Image (cartoon, rainbow, N blue to C red; front, side, top):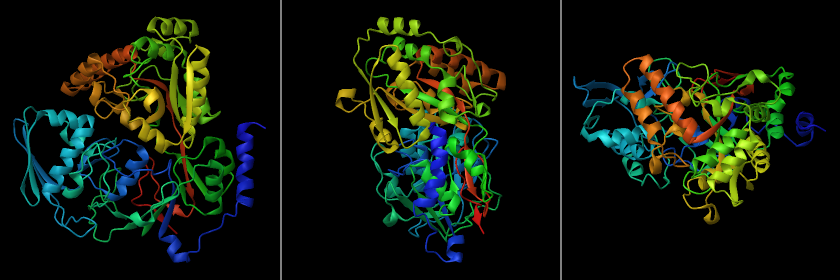
Length: 531
């Protein structure tokens, strides 16, 4: 039986035989509880220490931000009441909104924000740029603080309001003083929901309860901006790595909303009149085959180029999304297709016919001689599992000795942080995706930084990419920004921080008695209600 037929048949069988039943809640309590199946297990809960989307999405409920972007990528005030900037662009004075409180009842102070920003700047790409030009970041009153720079940074508010990881979440001072390379152990924020740490069972569930003292903004919610009004009293994340079981739970009403349904199961769920579906994010995702640039063989650009010469994006994307070719596009560059900065400048290595002979020649020139290549493949995320299977066959076809490590996303998230060689617990390749919203420009594009030890996992170093990025930040109009992106793309196609495996979209699905679900680069829980 084909995989898709097997899965589709399994949905019905699971619903009939798995003993799925509605939880023992009163009708009123059920309507006040939103049960959600996230994309992956919440294995850790520090949104500054790491960059996993599942952690960011959970953190949105607990921690708030000074600014938040709307769906036009414009930063809007969130925790901030007002700001003033000097005429030379070097001094910023900020004032917090009145009445903000932490979940433990203490007031939010400017000093909390100063320390939170200091921790965030160590780990975030834009934050690192700010840290390098910061002359002073200091509290000036209970609700006010000053940020003085040595040179102007026109995109400061974007840095504070962006949606890509790590986000500049505000935490109480005692928590924010945690070493940025160590995980926090206390989860107190000022956001609309409190985390129920005593109910957290990694691999099974995580829950949140409404924070009654949260003061939402008056504006309508729009992505990370506006009033984050919770319409339910409780949010439960049900960790469900088996897609057939998750689909059956959604159909039976055991869960209300599924973040990332397997595309193979969409036809079955479409036939259920109690389920609604739409593309989760029109800006989609950029698939990523990520190299470790510190160790052989991929410390040599020729080995990375060898892989690029055999990556067939149609093969990867059809493995990820199935037979619906409307859900994916091939990419000749690094930026999100159909956005102003998309470019295929220098992208021939991705767009020319695949060439296994050329790949073998490059591998030989790089000095590769059959040593194991450790490839981390998360089996609990269907897109990553599919990418890993395709890459395994491709790499073996050009003579690479693949050490295929089938594991879970939480383990990948921990192991990819290791800078050790593979034989001491390190790695050579892992797979992920970047939200297309994060790849529209260089500002928030984690995977495209190439500043060595400070770069994202894989630690690529390429002065040409960084020079192009500096030009983008210095650009004064759209034409200059586009020219800088052309320059970045040309450099990236040579040094290859990663290989894009293609652009794709996916669905989200929810019960018909749930309203307020909005598309975007992450699930927005505010404004979502049940009847």
